[in-house]
Amino acid sequence: MAAISVHQFAQCITCHAWSPDHSMVAFCPNSNEVHIYRLSQDKWEKVHVLQKHDQIVSGIDWSARSNRIVTASHDRNSYVWNLEGSEWVPTLVILRLNRAALCVQWSPKENKFAVGSGAKTVCICYYEQENNWWVSKLIRKRHDSSVTGVAWHPNNILLATTSTDGKCRVFSTFIKGVDTKDSRTGTSSDSKFGEQILQLDLSFSWAFGVKWSPSGNTLAYVGHNSMIYFVDDVGPSPLAQNVAFRDLPLRDVLFVSERMVVGVGFDCSPMVFAADERGIWSFVRFLGERKMASSGSKYGSQFSEAFGKLYGQSKHGVSNDAVEPSRSRGGVHENCINCIVPLRQPGISTVMRFSTSGLDGKVVVWDLENQADLSDYL
Amino acid sequence: MANTLRLYLTCIRNTLEAAMCLQNFPCQEVERHNKPEVELKTSPELLLNPVLICRNEAEKCLIETSINSLRISLKVKQADELENILTKKFLRFLSMRAEAFQVLRRKPVQGYDISFLITNYHYEDMQKHKLIDFIVQFMEDIDKEISELKMSVNTRGRLVATEFLKQFI
Image (tube, rainbow over all chains, first blue to last red):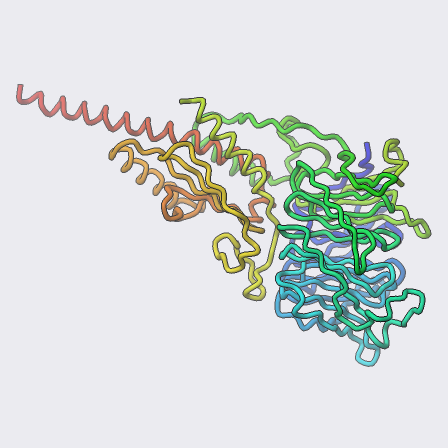
């Protein structure tokens, strides 16, 4: 079994992030708070509650080297939290947004972070020492709809975004004073902030979950039309591949290695995609067991019984694990998985472990160690 | 007769499995608001193509999806005037108590008899296959209930008329 640990933290989890040493996990239990739990002697205990937002927290990212947490919420605000002593202290971020913030990610050097928003803009934030706050530069008038996902290229300059207008775009986010021009990258002509390098119009439905491969050579994102798109040689002449699969759409992806991608979504089970020697991507299999959903109804033909069952069930919510196996969608998660986070060991670029969280309130850690058929892609 | 009902319900079930992929999405038009996009229809890029499944001219089901909500509208078979009145009264009775059912809409969509509105909050609280089972079971039972009501109206009418006319014999 690929899932090595399952824990039910809340009724529903929006997003989660791990601390640098993987001992603590921060997540949003579908409310305006962020809960941080620590694993001590096989038991999870709540150590901190970060309360500053007014609405649901839609994105959390925990930086690996500087140990800072950035949170973004539907109340148009974002905060950077620093651990001082035993308390997490928020620092104000001037986002200048007039709609909700949907996603957030630290850049690889952790001197900037990007926030995608419902105002059809992307905010790139950097720290201003004089005033002790984070200021932002906005990428405006480039997106036609809400920005659902952001991903940083390993060179700390390029940023890929996906939006509900179905397009994936790559921008340059060079900021004078924060970034240094690297003569090796050869992209000096694109060093203007907010310059659009590339626009991919492959999906005719909403696009989510964009990620770069570890080398930055390949880009992957998903469309709501049950397709996943792989783009090689991102630049003036990109090479795109579409992989269609017959199951429900995905929400997020993760590059486990240069040639293997794990996608998670409405199917409640992670899906593995891999590229063969020629570089052609295809669907490999699901991770974990997959049981077939039985469509027979076990209720009586009385109205009240049917309504009562649904109403009674809704009180227990999705934490009712006594559902018979034939009725579950299969696997470890019982509801849509909406977040996948790598658990990187320092120094190793291949991800052997990752965790997923979903609307069923569980955080599941998966391990690819003993998956024999997948080891040649790693 | 029962065969076509099975096919109709299976088709609706499969469509709902695909359409019920909802997520929390804040409003793009108004800050700090979260509204079901299928009801507002202000941003056309957030709506998906509606699907209309017809069993025959009299019975159909319209499924409209958006990024955070799903609307299912049903038109129930009404063979004669009596069934017309019974359906209207019965479904109005249910719609007025829409809060108890949570997923029911208070007013049916124009041209249909009853509507359901399922939002991402229902999707988070309840299980997807149970929601779909509920809708399909509802459709199965509504036909039975209307015929039962019709039969009981006719029976009662016959009894009352018999009793009344007895005095003239």
